[in-house]
Image 1 (cartoon, one colour):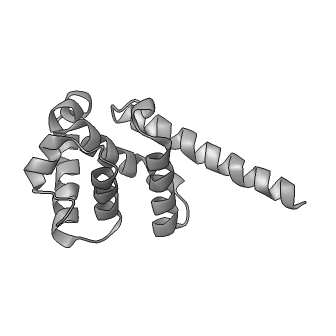
Image 2 (tube, rainbow, N blue to C red):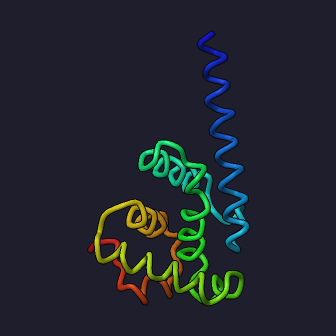
Image 3 (cartoon, one colour):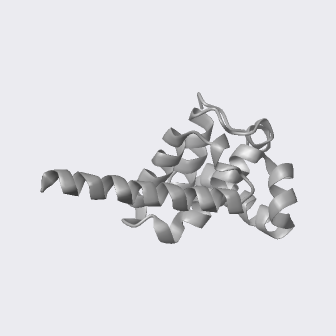
Length: 128
């Protein structure tokens, strides 16, 4: 019985991972360009914040895609309105230094997948 529960846990994780891959792709970031460890951490952070990751996957994917692609490439796929919305979230996350958005920005920074233009625009620093 315990083995079956383990299987269901892995299937749920795989479903979440596929969902995040779809949302990253929709945000303009090919999922193969994001390490599975980063994606699993995104899912864990979402579940920690909300209990259920699925309803919030698109918002998290947008933030991770923006941080990874940088403002120009993100804007090409998502347009100026969505880009401004995500930039506002990053700005708020940096100012507040807490919350899910701050954790996602910090994740991309520590995983070394954040675009240099994002680091410069928001004055991000691994040591700070």
